[in-house]
Image 1 (cartoon, rainbow, N blue to C red):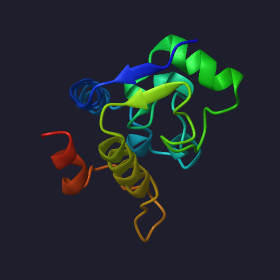
Image 2: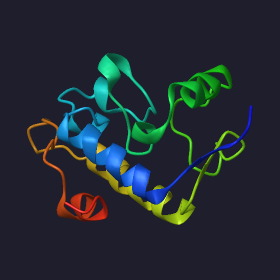
Image 3: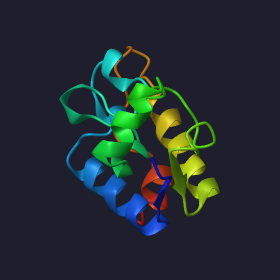
Length: 120
């Protein structure tokens, strides 16, 4: 399989779309649905997972690379035009996904820092 390259423009656009549709894992209301995964149940996705094609996702799953891996660990399958930006966007998403209120409820409202990366 050839390495698939994702432009920063497409990464932002597809992540914005997933955000607007409420499909980002950080937007989910249960701990189990907020784990780091490129594609999860009910079409949920992490920030960079939103930009991955079904072909790339299948390959990552075949290689057992669907959960918790950095952009570096998947570079033999997919490359990002700006890998530093992609890694930063994913880190902001994961930080948000790990936030909970004092009562244990997840923080589902996106932090400004994440939205700014998406141009929102």
